[in-house]
Length: 98
Image (cartoon, rainbow, N blue to C red; front, side):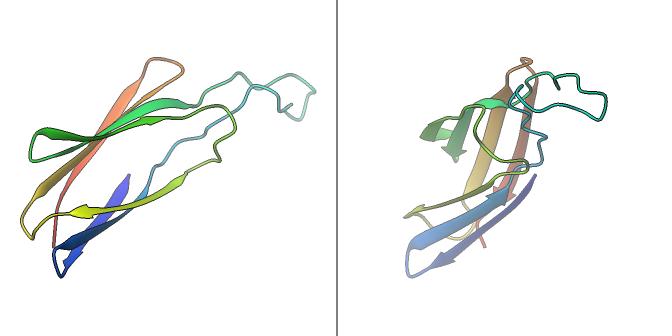
């Protein structure tokens, strides 16, 4: 996962690319067999340890989705992103606001 969190005039702009295959379960492989569903189900964003966003995803989200949002903050704030997928795997990343 790659995260860029940049502050300008008290507004933090966040851009994140979430590396994940996001298979819907309806695509077939070269042999004609269905590729098992494997997609991001939920996400949580926290700022300095406090909840900022709760996110719900589904099978229709693209491979390696791009997430962008803004909030009021300052340089040096710690941003944490955590996701859980349909196979109950968890992955996370952190970044400091620049």
